[in-house]
Length: 467
Image 1 (cartoon, rainbow, N blue to C red):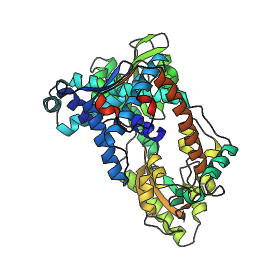
Image 2 (image 1 turned 90 degrees about the vertical axis):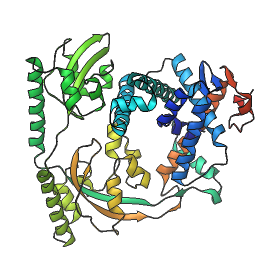
Image 3 (image 1 turned 90 degrees about the horizontal axis):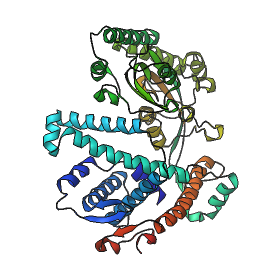
Image 4 (image 1 turned 180 degrees about the vertical axis):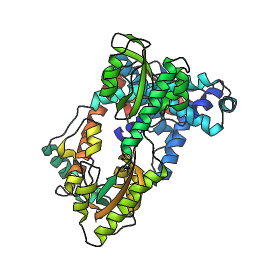
C-alpha cells in the first residue's frame, strides 16, 4: 500500500484526464467521496489507464482490477489531502507554481501556441492553469501529510536483522546488478570567464530596468532560465528559510520595488526585485541565468580528459593519481575518483556517513541524474576507461567526464554482510508501511466516506473503506 501511495503522490494523473474530466462533467458521475472531496469516474478511469501503462513499461502485472486499485489510491490521496488541511501542514506554494508553469509551458510547446492549446481543450489558458494548480496543490498536501505520518520513522540495526530473519530463505530479495565506478570531471577552463559573462548580462539588464529602458517582468519572460519566466519571474510569497542562503540574504536587504545587485546562488546568477513583504512572507520576482559555454570551450575539456585517459591506459599514470591531480569533483578526487551519493545527501541536508552508497543500481543512476554515466559503463569491462563525454552535474551545470568501471556485482540474493544498506531501506519501508496502515485505519474510521454501490464490491486492500 505505501509503495503504491508514494507512486501516486509523487506522480501526477495524466493531464489529459483533467481535461477529459472537464469535458465529460455532464456525463460523468461521482463514484466516491472522502470528507468533502469527490472522485469522478473519469479520474478513476484515467488513473487506471496510467497504472496499466506504467506496469507495461516496467514489465510487471498486478492481479488487482486496475479500476479498484486506482479508486483506492485516489481515496487515500483525498484522505491525506483532507487531513493535511485539518492539520495545517505546510506546502511550498512557490514550488507548486513552478511545477504548474513548467507543465503549462510544455503543453504550449507541444501544441505550438497558447491559442492552439486553448482550442484543443476548449478553455482559456487561465482555466487550464487553475485546474492544474488545484491538482498539484492536492498532491502537495497529500505528500506533506504523508511525511508528517512517516517522516520521522527510523530503524535500528536490530530491527533490520529481525526483518531479514523474518523473510523465508526461498523468498530473499534479489539485488540486481550493481556498479562500482570512478570518474574524473572537468569544468571548462573558461568557467570563471563564463560566470563573468553571465554577471555582465545581468548587470546590463539591471541597468536597463533602472533607467526605464525595459521592464523587469518583460526581461524575465524573455531570458530567465526557470519556470517563473512565464510569470515575469514572479514567485508566490515564501519565507526566507525556503530559499538558497545567498539569495535569501540579498532579498532580506531589499525594500519594496528595489532591485538587488547580481547574486550568485547554488542554482545560478540572479537579480531580484522585492514586490512586498507581509510578516515573514516575501513576494518577489527574479531573473536567473546559468553560465553557458561555447562549443570550443567545452571541446577543450573533452580533449584534455581524452589525453589523460590515454596516459592512464599506457600506465604512465594511475587513474587514482589522475583523479587527485585533475578532477574537479572535490569529494571523489580524494578517494581515487570513486563515485558515491555524497552530493545527493549533502544537497538534501541529510548527510550521514552510514548512508553513503558506492554501489549503484540502475535506478540509482536515474535518481542521481547520472544516466549518461550508466550508458558509458555498460560498454566497459572492469578496469576499462571510457572516452570523454559531455554531461551535467546534479545542479545541471555542464561539464566533461571520463568514467572507469571498477567492478560489477552480479545479481544475487541479499545478505546482511553485502547488502545491509539495501536491507535497511527495505526494513524502513516495511515499518513505515505498518505505521501508515495503522494511522490510515484510524482516519478512515473518523472521516465521512461514500463509495458508489457499483464499486463497493471491489477488492479493496483496506477493508475499512467499505462499511
